Image (cartoon, rainbow, N blue to C red; front, side, top):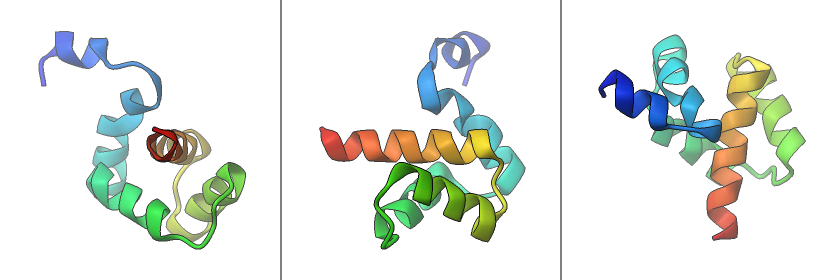
Length: 73
């Protein structure tokens, strides 16, 4: 991805490159984990990603926000 394309990404997706680099899993894998979790509430999912998978708050929040927004469409 070029620097221009990266700069154009806004919102939760702007965290995705750093999430993949830091945690070594593709974004789709994280989103699948969220989709298949028995938890449904935003902050429950954030807390679970932080506690069970070691994500930082901002990264967990971005993944959950983006995944839950897809459900609403």
